[in-house]
Image (cartoon, rainbow, N blue to C red; front, side, top):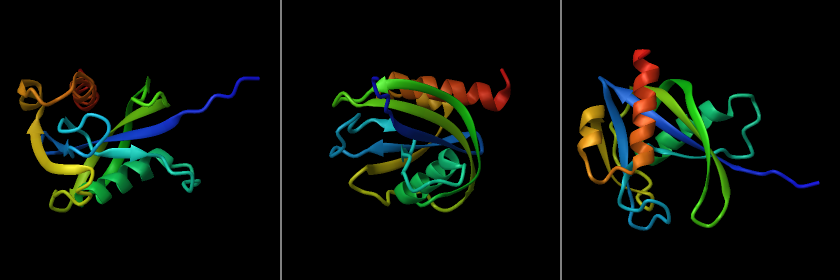
Length: 145
């Protein structure tokens, strides 16, 4: 029998006043170095209380940029293969901004932070297509359109 295993990654689309919190990925990052994306990271095996996605989103946002989130809601999921061939399940969430001053905390991962509106994100050249797609999906989720 063939085994199935995926690394589960959670992207946290933090929204404040119709702007999204994006991180500029450090040049040290293996994937998408120097590009903008949502804060996020992998689900840890120690999460066993039934809210693994929500806890991962909140933990990663706090660790990477020092911001607290409130409600975390599922938006979208997809699979992809990482640069090293690892199969990944990516879960996009919409997170309510609850407080804190956004700044790079995990400087080996985050070079800078930006609060940008959806149209500003689309106009930039340093945003990968998959991040633009996630922004569109979160916008549809938030507005019901």
